[in-house]
Image (cartoon, rainbow over all chains, first blue to last red; front, side):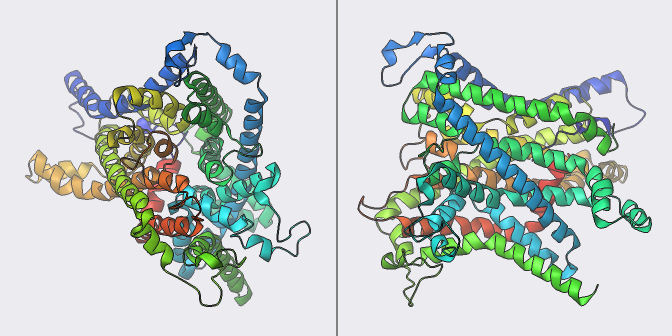
Length: 320
Length: 279
């Protein structure tokens, strides 16, 4: 829920005591700034940088908790083992698929919701905003259970309701196959996280100057032309922020997989693979290597987004 | 606006409300189904068989031994983590909004980096470390990693709020004869309070939603939070189908959070979008 746009330091000049900006004053302000912000920075580094370095270190060892005495340095062989194993590539494929499908659907659906919220009658607007926050408030595990029970053969109503569709009968086992299980996982993820995207897009919509819309209307632009030429370019920043955060979030998918399939039928995500290696199988070395690989992929995606869209982000906000 | 258009907006609005509420309504309905009715293939309990059995089961019966400690753990751990991260973020956000010092970008950038961090990459080394130093399956053993979830968003949201505070007012008060402390307490604190409060709610949600840490760094009811307990719940005995109990527990953990969201919706929307879009 943060942003890739330029940090605000440029526009926030200190308002304190203009005219007294001696170097003494600047120095004490700098000191106070670090004194106040330092602890937060230190805690953030401690809870993330330290563990990831530890993971990098652990990943170089053949290290199993059930057999701690035989811990031995093996260099990069854990990485070789993982990268040459189909399990890794299957979980990678599953993760990429879930990410692409959910982010694409959420973007379209989020836009639709944002448009309705922006244009809806004043009377129903508060109701809509309250409703849209409910999926945000429901924890992922609960949402995963709700969808799992809905699609399950025994407790579900989906097979009863959609029995008229070809291929769906009373005994359709959604969690029995890879594709159908992933379909349900995607639905659960989409339901839970679309509100976040649509709120960000709604905020972006609010930043589109009304004047431009009116001007385009006067010039006879159709709704579709206005959307493409006026609305979308003006909310590029919001779209990019929403896309970046949802992509990275979707890439870490774990809760839904754990609750709905537990990785059965090739539905394991990369996070789940790391969890299974470390926590269930106590293979600290291998698990750490998976964690480090996942971390690198996430950093890569983030770098691509930020590098690829930086210019646009800045100029879209008039700060370029 | 024509009547036809109006009708369309209302239809769209109703569709959104149904979309948002549908799974919640389903889990509520499920939680009131009697064991014999769970597999009726319908959305609602049939033939007037709605029952409170599932709720009494998880609140008093054997399920209670699993569920109630988890509820206590979740509340305690999430509140403490929220408090610590709000406190740290408050200082940091004040410095970012008010003072001029090199390193602002570094702090905001680090927060961004931590926010995109894959949680599972932190869990793997922590699992081993916590076992060695005795933090495994304890409250601090979850509070510390929860800071990686709550601190970044707290810093971003709060600095977005703090930047909109007209800091000149503090000086105006001082010119009017207030001491620095009085000016801060009477002018800045009331202006900053809503932002801090909103940040706290958002941070609390994020901690409350955690599953990976909860399931990896705990093993007993000493520290296991609700989502992890739900994920591992397998019924009071292995022959019992836990569906009804899980549904009831899910409703119990959902109600307070949804209520909180509905009461403070305006602020939460502002907080989520301020931090992200205005940054």
